[in-house]
Amino acid sequence: MKKTSHSQMLLRKAGFTLVELLVYIAILGIVVIVAGQAFSNSTKIRVRTQSMLKASEVAENVATLFKTDVAQTGAKSSMEAGTTDAGNNFGAVHTTVYMDPTNSSSSNVDQSSFRISSSSNYSDLTIRRLRYDANGYYQATEEVRWYVENKTLKRSCKLIEKKAGLTLTDDDPCADVGSSPDGIEMASGVETFLVQAAKPSVETANEQVFPASGAAGTFNFYSRSGDMKYVGLSTASATGEAGVGGTSVVLTNFFSNFDNTTQDVIEETSQKLNQVLAMENNTLEGTHTWASACEKITLEEGQVYEISFNVDPPTGVGDEKNRSLSFVPGVDHMSVGFRSVTTGDFPRKDGVKLIDDFLFFPPLDASKGSGKRTMRFTVPQKIENVCLAFTFACYSPLVHQGRLKISYLKLKKVAGTNYVFDNGYNPESHKNDKKNIKALKLTLKIERNGEGGSSEVVVPIPSNGPTD
Image (tube, rainbow, N blue to C red; front, side, top):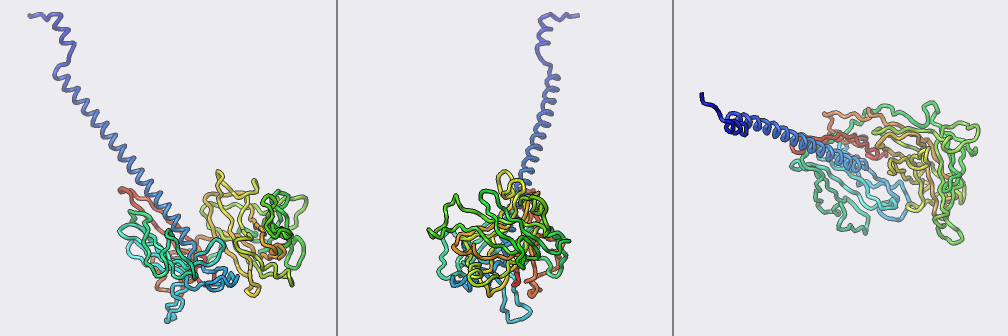
């Protein structure tokens, strides 16, 4: 038998046989294939996730813009009579916001401020509302359209009417009267853009937050003072009882930021605000601050709320009555909103306001009577321990000497069942009833690389129709 030399044995141990090499290559191939497949799957999942997130982000952003846009549907009152600066009549109504208020056919009179047509998964929505300047004066009537072309959602705007002498800038988002507007792309890959109108005949009770349901609608105000920038004012019942509430409260003795000697506004460091906080109509015992006296309120995320109250015509005689009519929009300030019990400031998150105040005007013409003020809103997150606050700042010479009467103050949760959406309901077939529709619902679906994102939002339109 032939012996294997020692050198030959070492040579065999230093390498691989052909079989061993083939087995090694096969194993390596399997590992590479598995790793490659895992990497490919991981990449696909990442791309799909990114596409889904992007589609959802776009859908939410577009829905937010849509809500902000459409919530102003039907805004119709301005500070002028007609389209001039001749008067200070906040009750002036510009009928150009109505779709078809003078149709010769009584069954087709349309005093709403919107129009919807839908086909398959897409709607074409047109709304009308007034445009104001920084002081609340009338500038124009805008007609805004949301529609889809080749799966691209677009928005256009044009002026139906404008104030004499108004000139649009080159970057104005609306086309001038008589011009054809260009559609601006809001989103691509739109699979569904459906707008539905709530049926106008269905109503259910809202839930009242303030005053409490057992309070018979009565309330009172607690005047804020002691803080450096706040000065207390006087409150009284409608019959003149100091510090007493009821269904209405009269406010007087506002602080003036106007210096009669210099005939100018006082220095900024000396300027003061008046603020009153809403409370139940009860008798307080012991020592209280505004934070302990006011009604503590929690606002829930996504819930629609409504603040409503009447600003009654001015009372008093002679100069006192006339001075209450001298409010100057854009100069004097009246607002309603919420203040944190903890900080005394607006409710905030990381320094950002969670809800701003709502500006309002008093009656500026005694012959026009009272006016109901209504504000609807939602908050982006739950807000606890806040109080309903009215804030006033007087800068014109005489307004601080007047009287302001707030009546029937209420904060309500707007019941979601107030808005019933029926796929078979076509508002264009019930034009006489369109003026009573108070909400629109948007269903939006957007696709990115085969992945979809969606959003559904109900938008209250309280100003739609001639009665609001």
